[in-house]
Image 1 (cartoon, helix red, strand yellow):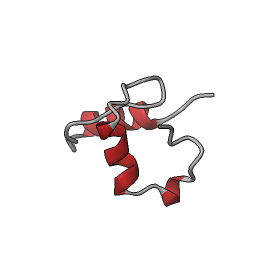
Image 2: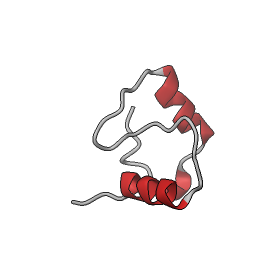
Image 3: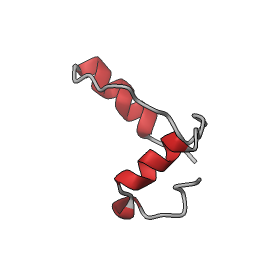
Image 4: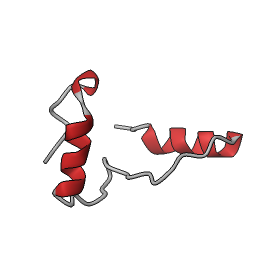
Length: 54
């Protein structure tokens, strides 16, 4: 199951649940987060995780 062909604004809960149900592993383009912390360092790390350099 790939999310790369779907526009970001069209993703929904079912798309994400499908990743879990199909046991899609983490990869260069997919990184699961258990929880989010909101300290400054945590925010920078999160932003680095979601930024893609092509």
